Image 1 (cartoon, rainbow, N blue to C red):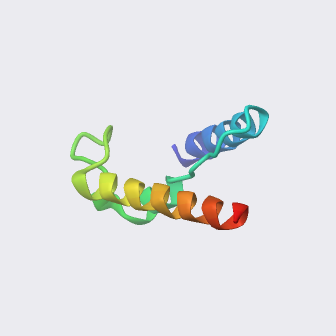
Image 2: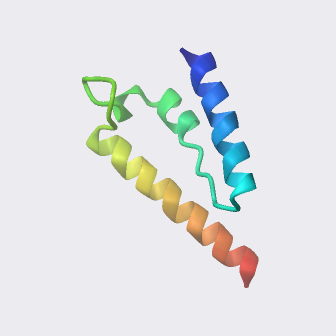
Image 3: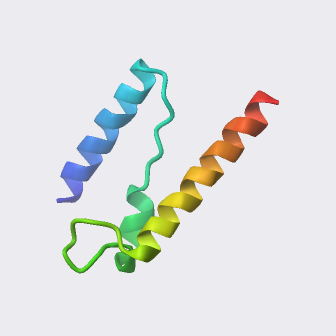
Amino acid sequence: MNSVFTYLNKKFKELSDIYEVQYIDIYDIFSENPAYVSATNIYPSEQGMEAIGSQVIVTINNATLKSS
């Protein structure tokens, strides 16, 4: 299953480069923290959603600092 996610992350990153949008890779966050996935293994848990939000904030802050 990890190879599928690795492949998809690579393709999403390629697409983000083509369309000039920011790609936020959350795979590592979730692979290191099983509690971030809900019991159904489909959706993020509440902790997982908070982790995604934190990563979005970090990415926005980094982009803002680069442009200033």
